[in-house]
Length: 439
Ligand code: HEC
Ligand code: HEC
Image (cartoon, rainbow, N blue to C red; front, side, top):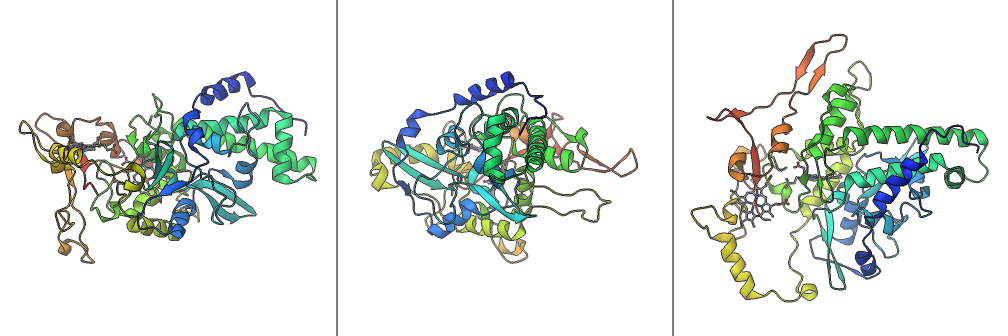
């Protein structure tokens, strides 16, 4: 196909491509090809497959595009393991299980075909799975925080799409893979237009989610991005978009369904609402146009989110794998236990905040009478920001501060999401960080 416009600066794109080329890690490349060791975390192989590849309603890119796309500036499939690993996401080496015939990265799932097309999106495992590399071994830890770079991955995807638009040869290869060899010229132009539209959409997402300093590996301002997508983009009120400048680390998942509150700010007690919010921040969509007959409809998949949550509930805490890492050094372990449990200089010990279970395996729990179904949860304690002294931004911004929903046909706000901050003697708002059971 003759490209109609070449409005893209290929020079600019080259810069992007080389910048991300540096993320490669040859040390890890060397390790792959070896058998991954899985720990006993109470999951069957089928559970693991379901957790890795069950779609949650996230629409990142049409599935066939992802398979056909090439890395910006290089003739390498974007889905190539080495490319995916540059961004810190995981891919299995072994011949793929029936759950993953196309060798997708872990936590990237195929959304079922709708209107003749399947899509690829994020699912929980992308952000909540990791590995330990020790000597020649790879140990997979399910539910562990990722060290992936969310922003770099999206930028890499955008750069690859832009290269496809800008180079005729590359586009032709892409179009043959997506449409087949026999496709007509007009089908090809329509595909080109769609890529341009979708790239513009992804760039809008990237712009709304652009932090003042790169989040880097293992951190993301999840709440900032979710609020921008829902209250800015989906509500169609871009004045609600705020710079996402409050990155947090990805948490581990084992044990979390037993907690009364989750998230670093202790802000969520309803896993279902929490998961839907997460989907909407990770390329899910919702219709928030009150005048539309489709108002409230969302891509978030209720049944699948339920299943994913149940899998998290079943997931066990990883234990030190002696057969891989060698026996526990008892002397060090006992010194560590002292450090962890004893307070020094009148300060609380680690265990005072990051609780250990008692000898019967119990954590301090909420009384069953407090819950409609008589369920007890592990009780979390909120610690004032001034005491914990970590970066307070996510807690301060959490309360949807200043984000407003304007009524149709009026300029005045009809709903204002407000925080319930208590004020301290010093006049500062108090917000809280959560401490939790060590699991
Ligand atoms: C794109 C990355 C991403 C995806 C996908 C994702 N999460 Fe998370 N998750 C995060 C981040 C980041 C946080 C911490 C946010 C915060 O507290 O500010 C988090 C927090 C959580 C927490 C709170 C844990 C705690 O101890 O406070 C749970 C539970 C959780 N996620 C479960 C899930 C489940 C279940 C799914 C899939 C349905 C999922 N997540 C998908 C990034 C992700
Ligand atoms: C006064 C309560 C308190 C004490 C004492 C405490 N912590 Fe924490 N810790 C927290 C809170 C709250 C967070 C979450 C911080 C945040 O949200 O910024 C945290 C975060 C952490 C994290 C980061 C987890 C992640 O995934 O990013 C680690 C690791 C940690 N603590 C280890 C320790 C160790 C080891 C000790 C003892 C030497 C200790 N903590 C003592 C309350 C405490």
